[in-house]
Amino acid sequence: MEKSYGIEAARAQLGDIADHARTTGQTIALTRHGRTVAVIGPADTVKPAGGVEVNLHFPHADIQDVGLPALPRVGEQLIWVLDNDDADEGTWDVTEVQWHLSPNSTTVGVSLEPTDDHTKQLMDRQEAERLAASRARYAKAIDRTALPHVFMPGGVMPGHCKCGYPKDTSCHTDRTTQK
Image (cartoon, rainbow, N blue to C red; front, side, top):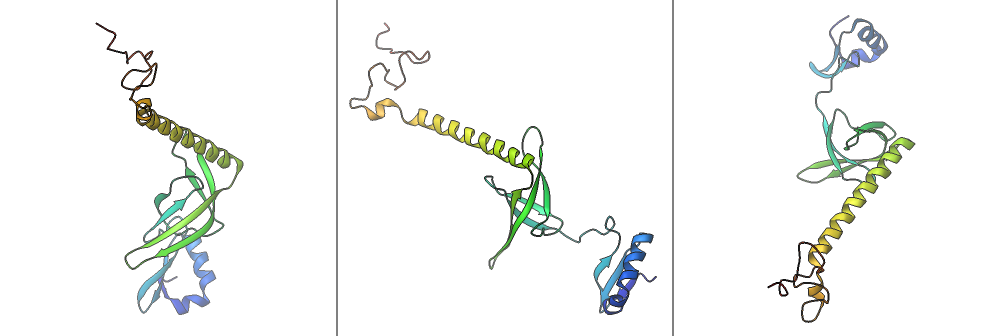
């Protein structure tokens, strides 16, 4: 069998070409006007010429920018290793593929939903951890910025030192009484 076929000539023999590629392991080029436009070969030997950059949109999570060998289609599944200490894998269904076109760039957004209960549990756990971390950051920010002397006329709340913290805090004592 030849190494390359014109695309019109290959149309009539496509089944034979595919069988030949599968059984022999050879790749066969399909050409148009003498230039290769496609390659038929065993799936493990034919590599994509390039990849596509996509934004993966997970529910309740940050967008992940990744390079994929091909654009996923709605209904396909992706396996994604979650960013945690256990390196858990989640299986995701592609629910939507959106193209965002502008004069300077093109962005592809891929929306994903968890496929199975294991992935849903991983997402719920990750969301709970993210929420707890957010609440801790908020409480720390409030603790630093909302000191009682900001709200009290005269600046010092009873039972607190001048810096605004309670007097019984080990690192804050009322220095006016120490002599």
